[in-house]
Amino acid sequence: MIIQLENTISPEHLSALEEKLSAIRYQTNRVKTQYGDYIIGVGKAAFDIRSIGTMPGVRDIHQVSDAYKLVSKKWRVEDTIINLGDGIQIGTGHFAIMAGPCSIESEAQVEKTVQHLQEQGVRIMRGGVYKPRSSPYSFRGLGIDGLKMWHQKAREAGIKIITEVMMVEQIEAMADYVDIFQVGARNSQNFNLLDALGEVDKPVLLKRGISGTIDELLQAAEYIFSNGNERIMLCERGIRSYEKAYRNTMDINAIAMLKEKTHLPVIADPSHGIGLRRYVDKIALASIMAGADGVIMEVHEQPEKAFSDGQQTLSFPEASRLYKRMHQAYELREHF
Ligand code: PEP
Ligand code: MN
Image 1: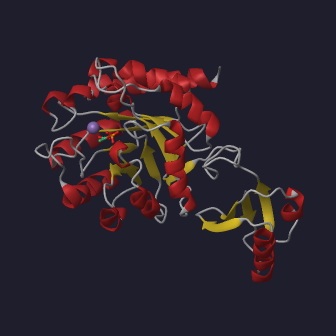
Image 2: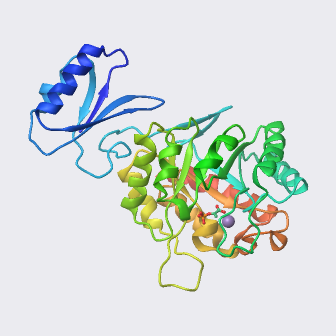
Protein backbone atom coordinates (compact mmCIF):
# COMPACT_ATOMS: atom_id res chain seq x y z
CA MET A 1 0.00 0.00 0.00
CA ILE A 2 1.22 3.53 -0.78
CA ILE A 3 -0.15 6.45 1.16
CA GLN A 4 0.70 9.93 -0.01
CA LEU A 5 0.63 12.40 2.84
CA GLU A 6 -0.43 16.01 2.76
CA ASN A 7 2.62 18.27 3.20
CA THR A 8 0.83 19.83 6.11
CA ILE A 9 0.05 16.63 8.02
CA SER A 10 0.23 17.25 11.77
CA PRO A 11 2.25 14.98 14.10
CA GLU A 12 -1.02 13.86 15.77
CA HIS A 13 -2.58 12.85 12.46
CA LEU A 14 0.60 11.06 11.47
CA SER A 15 0.62 9.08 14.71
CA ALA A 16 -3.05 8.21 14.29
CA LEU A 17 -2.29 6.92 10.81
CA GLU A 18 0.70 4.89 11.97
CA GLU A 19 -1.34 3.39 14.81
CA LYS A 20 -4.07 2.41 12.40
CA LEU A 21 -1.55 0.68 10.12
CA SER A 22 0.08 -1.10 13.01
CA ALA A 23 -3.36 -2.28 14.20
CA ILE A 24 -3.84 -4.08 10.90
CA ARG A 25 -0.26 -5.43 11.21
CA TYR A 26 1.22 -3.44 8.31
CA GLN A 27 4.92 -2.61 8.48
CA THR A 28 5.57 0.95 7.42
CA ASN A 29 8.37 2.84 5.75
CA ARG A 30 8.37 6.62 5.37
CA VAL A 31 9.67 7.95 2.04
CA LYS A 32 10.33 11.65 1.48
CA THR A 33 11.29 12.65 -2.05
CA GLN A 34 11.75 15.89 -3.97
CA TYR A 35 8.03 15.89 -4.76
CA GLY A 36 6.17 13.92 -2.14
CA ASP A 37 5.94 12.45 1.30
CA TYR A 38 4.76 8.84 1.43
CA ILE A 39 4.20 5.94 3.76
CA ILE A 40 4.74 2.54 2.21
CA GLY A 41 2.81 -0.14 4.06
CA VAL A 42 3.60 -3.82 3.66
CA GLY A 43 1.26 -6.44 5.03
CA LYS A 44 -1.26 -9.11 4.20
CA ALA A 45 -4.41 -8.32 6.18
CA ALA A 46 -7.50 -7.29 4.27
CA PHE A 47 -8.84 -3.86 5.23
CA ASP A 48 -11.20 -1.22 4.00
CA ILE A 49 -9.05 1.17 1.98
CA ARG A 50 -11.50 4.02 2.55
CA SER A 51 -11.05 3.84 6.31
CA ILE A 52 -7.44 4.98 5.79
CA GLY A 53 -7.96 7.07 2.66
CA THR A 54 -10.33 9.39 4.50
CA MET A 55 -8.06 10.00 7.49
CA PRO A 56 -6.86 13.58 7.98
CA GLY A 57 -3.50 14.28 6.38
CA VAL A 58 -3.89 11.56 3.74
CA ARG A 59 -3.85 12.89 0.20
CA ASP A 60 -4.05 9.61 -1.71
CA ILE A 61 -3.88 5.89 -1.10
CA HIS A 62 -3.32 2.97 -3.40
CA GLN A 63 -2.94 -0.77 -3.04
CA VAL A 64 -0.02 -2.21 -5.02
CA SER A 65 1.08 -5.76 -4.43
CA ASP A 66 4.18 -5.84 -6.66
CA ALA A 67 7.75 -5.86 -5.37
CA TYR A 68 8.05 -2.38 -6.81
CA LYS A 69 5.38 0.16 -6.06
CA LEU A 70 6.51 3.76 -6.29
CA VAL A 71 7.90 3.39 -9.81
CA SER A 72 4.78 1.54 -10.94
CA LYS A 73 2.08 3.01 -13.12
CA LYS A 74 -0.38 1.39 -10.75
CA TRP A 75 0.66 4.05 -8.29
CA ARG A 76 1.23 7.05 -10.51
CA VAL A 77 -0.75 7.23 -13.71
CA GLU A 78 0.86 10.43 -14.95
CA ASP A 79 4.26 10.02 -16.54
CA THR A 80 7.24 11.52 -14.76
CA ILE A 81 8.89 14.39 -16.57
CA ILE A 82 12.43 15.18 -15.45
CA ASN A 83 13.37 18.83 -15.60
CA LEU A 84 17.09 19.50 -16.05
CA GLY A 85 16.65 23.27 -16.12
CA ASP A 86 17.35 25.69 -19.00
CA GLY A 87 14.29 24.38 -20.84
CA ILE A 88 15.53 20.78 -21.01
CA GLN A 89 12.99 18.13 -20.06
CA ILE A 90 12.98 14.37 -20.38
CA GLY A 91 9.87 12.20 -20.46
CA THR A 92 6.67 11.71 -22.40
CA GLY A 93 6.27 14.50 -24.94
CA HIS A 94 9.89 15.66 -24.55
CA PHE A 95 12.20 13.58 -26.70
CA ALA A 96 15.79 13.67 -25.40
CA ILE A 97 19.05 12.96 -27.16
CA MET A 98 22.20 12.36 -25.11
CA ALA A 99 25.30 11.97 -27.24
CA GLY A 100 29.02 11.92 -26.73
CA PRO A 101 32.01 9.65 -26.53
CA CYS A 102 32.19 6.45 -24.58
CA SER A 103 35.12 7.95 -22.63
CA ILE A 104 36.18 11.51 -22.01
CA GLU A 105 39.71 11.49 -23.43
CA SER A 106 41.12 15.02 -23.70
CA GLU A 107 40.30 18.71 -23.71
CA ALA A 108 40.48 18.82 -27.51
CA GLN A 109 38.06 15.91 -27.81
CA VAL A 110 35.60 17.57 -25.43
CA GLU A 111 35.81 20.87 -27.33
CA LYS A 112 35.13 19.19 -30.67
CA THR A 113 32.23 17.19 -29.29
CA VAL A 114 30.67 20.20 -27.57
CA GLN A 115 30.89 22.14 -30.82
CA HIS A 116 29.29 19.30 -32.76
CA LEU A 117 26.44 18.99 -30.24
CA GLN A 118 25.89 22.74 -30.20
CA GLU A 119 25.68 22.85 -33.99
CA GLN A 120 23.17 20.01 -33.93
CA GLY A 121 21.04 21.37 -31.09
CA VAL A 122 21.80 18.40 -28.80
CA ARG A 123 21.67 19.64 -25.22
CA ILE A 124 22.95 16.66 -23.20
CA MET A 125 26.44 15.21 -23.55
CA ARG A 126 27.37 11.75 -22.40
CA GLY A 127 30.87 10.54 -21.56
CA GLY A 128 32.62 8.38 -19.02
CA VAL A 129 35.33 9.58 -16.65
CA TYR A 130 35.16 6.40 -14.57
CA LYS A 131 34.99 3.49 -16.97
CA PRO A 132 33.98 -0.04 -16.07
CA ARG A 133 36.20 -2.07 -18.40
CA SER A 134 36.15 -5.82 -18.85
CA SER A 135 39.96 -5.86 -18.80
CA PRO A 136 41.85 -3.97 -16.08
CA TYR A 137 44.47 -3.04 -18.70
CA SER A 138 42.02 -1.02 -20.82
CA PHE A 139 41.65 2.78 -20.47
CA ARG A 140 39.73 3.45 -17.28
CA GLY A 141 38.95 7.14 -17.55
CA LEU A 142 40.30 10.59 -16.63
CA GLY A 143 38.56 10.67 -13.26
CA ILE A 144 37.45 13.76 -11.39
CA ASP A 145 39.94 16.11 -13.11
CA GLY A 146 38.54 15.08 -16.47
CA LEU A 147 35.04 15.72 -15.20
CA LYS A 148 35.93 19.22 -14.01
CA MET A 149 37.51 20.11 -17.35
CA TRP A 150 34.48 18.73 -19.22
CA HIS A 151 32.07 20.54 -16.92
CA GLN A 152 33.69 23.89 -17.62
CA LYS A 153 33.47 23.44 -21.42
CA ALA A 154 29.93 22.06 -21.29
CA ARG A 155 28.67 24.88 -19.05
CA GLU A 156 30.07 27.53 -21.38
CA ALA A 157 28.05 25.93 -24.19
CA GLY A 158 24.85 25.41 -22.16
CA ILE A 159 25.20 21.63 -22.42
CA LYS A 160 24.23 19.23 -19.63
CA ILE A 161 26.39 16.32 -18.52
CA ILE A 162 25.49 12.67 -17.97
CA THR A 163 28.26 10.46 -16.66
CA GLU A 164 28.65 7.15 -14.88
CA VAL A 165 29.28 6.89 -11.16
CA MET A 166 30.74 3.55 -10.10
CA MET A 167 31.10 3.85 -6.34
CA VAL A 168 29.26 5.46 -3.45
CA GLU A 169 32.51 7.25 -2.51
CA GLN A 170 32.59 9.10 -5.86
CA ILE A 171 29.15 10.67 -5.56
CA GLU A 172 29.98 13.64 -3.37
CA ALA A 173 32.99 14.82 -5.35
CA MET A 174 31.13 14.41 -8.66
CA ALA A 175 27.78 15.93 -7.70
CA ASP A 176 28.63 19.57 -8.44
CA TYR A 177 29.79 18.72 -11.96
CA VAL A 178 27.08 16.31 -13.05
CA ASP A 179 23.52 16.88 -14.30
CA ILE A 180 22.54 13.21 -14.50
CA PHE A 181 24.27 10.34 -12.73
CA GLN A 182 24.44 7.19 -14.83
CA VAL A 183 24.40 3.78 -13.18
CA GLY A 184 26.05 1.34 -15.56
CA ALA A 185 24.85 -2.12 -16.45
CA ARG A 186 27.43 -3.73 -14.18
CA ASN A 187 26.20 -1.75 -11.20
CA SER A 188 22.49 -2.11 -11.91
CA GLN A 189 22.02 -4.17 -8.76
CA ASN A 190 24.65 -2.49 -6.61
CA PHE A 191 22.11 -1.78 -3.91
CA ASN A 192 24.45 0.34 -1.81
CA LEU A 193 25.04 2.63 -4.79
CA LEU A 194 21.30 2.76 -5.53
CA ASP A 195 20.53 3.61 -1.89
CA ALA A 196 23.10 6.40 -1.95
CA LEU A 197 21.78 7.83 -5.23
CA GLY A 198 18.37 7.92 -3.62
CA GLU A 199 19.69 10.57 -1.30
CA VAL A 200 21.10 12.78 -4.03
CA ASP A 201 19.24 15.72 -5.55
CA LYS A 202 20.22 14.86 -9.14
CA PRO A 203 18.45 12.75 -11.75
CA VAL A 204 19.69 9.20 -12.25
CA LEU A 205 19.76 7.15 -15.44
CA LEU A 206 19.67 3.51 -14.41
CA LYS A 207 20.83 0.98 -16.96
CA ARG A 208 19.49 -2.52 -17.17
CA GLY A 209 21.89 -5.18 -15.94
CA ILE A 210 23.75 -7.30 -18.48
CA SER A 211 21.52 -10.25 -17.59
CA GLY A 212 18.90 -8.25 -15.74
CA THR A 213 15.19 -8.84 -16.09
CA ILE A 214 12.61 -6.09 -16.48
CA ASP A 215 11.38 -6.73 -12.95
CA GLU A 216 14.91 -6.52 -11.55
CA LEU A 217 15.37 -3.17 -13.30
CA LEU A 218 12.14 -1.84 -11.82
CA GLN A 219 13.05 -3.08 -8.35
CA ALA A 220 16.47 -1.44 -8.68
CA ALA A 221 14.72 1.82 -9.54
CA GLU A 222 12.48 1.34 -6.50
CA TYR A 223 15.64 1.37 -4.33
CA ILE A 224 16.47 4.86 -5.59
CA PHE A 225 12.91 6.16 -5.33
CA SER A 226 12.27 4.71 -1.86
CA ASN A 227 15.39 6.46 -0.60
CA GLY A 228 14.04 9.82 -1.67
CA ASN A 229 14.91 10.45 -5.31
CA GLU A 230 12.03 10.41 -7.79
CA ARG A 231 14.04 11.69 -10.72
CA ILE A 232 14.94 8.38 -12.34
CA MET A 233 15.04 7.21 -15.94
CA LEU A 234 15.46 3.63 -17.05
CA CYS A 235 17.76 2.59 -19.85
CA GLU A 236 17.54 -0.44 -22.11
CA ARG A 237 21.10 -1.13 -23.30
CA GLY A 238 20.86 -4.68 -24.52
CA ILE A 239 21.15 -7.92 -22.62
CA ARG A 240 23.40 -10.92 -22.93
CA SER A 241 21.84 -13.69 -24.99
CA TYR A 242 23.16 -16.77 -26.76
CA GLU A 243 23.52 -14.73 -29.98
CA LYS A 244 27.16 -13.97 -30.74
CA ALA A 245 26.71 -12.07 -34.01
CA TYR A 246 26.58 -8.77 -32.13
CA ARG A 247 27.73 -7.48 -28.75
CA ASN A 248 24.35 -7.47 -26.97
CA THR A 249 20.74 -8.21 -27.83
CA MET A 250 18.81 -4.95 -27.77
CA ASP A 251 15.55 -5.85 -26.08
CA ILE A 252 13.10 -3.64 -27.92
CA ASN A 253 10.28 -5.59 -26.24
CA ALA A 254 11.41 -4.23 -22.89
CA ILE A 255 10.97 -0.64 -24.04
CA ALA A 256 7.32 -1.21 -24.91
CA MET A 257 6.70 -3.12 -21.68
CA LEU A 258 8.49 -0.64 -19.44
CA LYS A 259 6.45 2.21 -20.87
CA GLU A 260 3.36 0.34 -19.74
CA LYS A 261 4.64 -0.70 -16.32
CA THR A 262 6.29 2.49 -15.13
CA HIS A 263 5.72 6.23 -15.19
CA LEU A 264 9.49 6.82 -15.41
CA PRO A 265 11.07 7.91 -18.70
CA VAL A 266 12.60 5.10 -20.76
CA ILE A 267 15.81 5.74 -22.66
CA ALA A 268 17.32 3.52 -25.35
CA ASP A 269 21.05 2.94 -25.75
CA PRO A 270 21.44 1.52 -29.26
CA SER A 271 25.24 1.87 -29.17
CA HIS A 272 25.71 -0.74 -26.45
CA GLY A 273 22.44 -2.39 -27.49
CA ILE A 274 23.92 -3.84 -30.66
CA GLY A 275 27.55 -2.78 -30.40
CA LEU A 276 28.10 -2.39 -34.14
CA ARG A 277 28.23 1.06 -35.73
CA ARG A 278 26.41 0.26 -38.94
CA TYR A 279 23.24 -0.85 -37.17
CA VAL A 280 23.04 1.81 -34.48
CA ASP A 281 20.75 4.07 -36.53
CA LYS A 282 18.22 1.32 -37.24
CA ILE A 283 18.10 0.19 -33.62
CA ALA A 284 17.73 3.78 -32.43
CA LEU A 285 14.78 4.34 -34.74
CA ALA A 286 13.18 1.01 -33.79
CA SER A 287 13.52 1.92 -30.11
CA ILE A 288 11.72 5.19 -30.67
CA MET A 289 8.90 3.39 -32.44
CA ALA A 290 8.66 1.01 -29.46
CA GLY A 291 8.11 3.98 -27.15
CA ALA A 292 11.52 5.28 -26.00
CA ASP A 293 11.48 8.80 -24.57
CA GLY A 294 15.07 9.38 -25.56
CA VAL A 295 18.25 7.91 -26.94
CA ILE A 296 21.74 7.86 -25.46
CA MET A 297 24.41 7.20 -28.07
CA GLU A 298 28.15 7.21 -28.59
CA VAL A 299 29.69 9.73 -31.00
CA HIS A 300 33.30 10.69 -31.66
CA GLU A 301 35.12 12.91 -34.13
CA GLN A 302 37.22 9.90 -35.16
CA PRO A 303 35.51 6.73 -33.93
CA GLU A 304 38.35 4.52 -35.10
CA LYS A 305 40.68 6.40 -32.71
CA ALA A 306 38.30 6.34 -29.69
CA PHE A 307 39.87 5.05 -26.47
CA SER A 308 36.86 2.76 -25.92
CA ASP A 309 33.88 1.37 -27.84
CA GLY A 310 34.97 2.82 -31.20
CA GLN A 311 33.33 -0.08 -33.03
CA GLN A 312 29.88 1.10 -31.96
CA THR A 313 30.54 4.85 -32.10
CA LEU A 314 29.15 7.09 -34.84
CA SER A 315 31.15 9.82 -36.56
CA PHE A 316 29.79 13.37 -36.36
CA PRO A 317 28.25 13.28 -39.88
CA GLU A 318 26.64 9.88 -39.18
CA ALA A 319 25.31 11.10 -35.85
CA SER A 320 23.99 14.36 -37.35
CA ARG A 321 21.98 12.40 -39.87
CA LEU A 322 20.58 10.18 -37.13
CA TYR A 323 19.55 13.10 -34.85
CA LYS A 324 17.32 14.39 -37.65
CA ARG A 325 15.86 11.02 -38.38
CA MET A 326 15.18 10.36 -34.70
CA HIS A 327 13.23 13.60 -34.41
CA GLN A 328 11.25 12.61 -37.50
CA ALA A 329 10.57 9.15 -36.09
CA TYR A 330 9.43 10.63 -32.80
CA GLU A 331 7.06 13.03 -34.56
CA LEU A 332 5.67 10.16 -36.59
CA ARG A 333 5.14 8.02 -33.50
CA GLU A 334 3.41 10.83 -31.64
CA HIS A 335 0.90 11.07 -34.47
CA PHE A 336 0.07 7.40 -34.66
C1 PEP B 1 28.76 3.27 -21.24
O1 PEP B 1 27.72 3.93 -21.25
O2 PEP B 1 29.80 3.60 -21.84
C2 PEP B 1 28.73 1.96 -20.55
C3 PEP B 1 29.83 1.43 -20.02
O3 PEP B 1 27.52 1.39 -20.58
P1 PEP B 1 26.97 0.02 -19.96
O4 PEP B 1 27.01 0.19 -18.48
O5 PEP B 1 25.59 -0.05 -20.51
O6 PEP B 1 27.86 -1.08 -20.46
MN1 MN C 1 30.67 2.64 -24.02
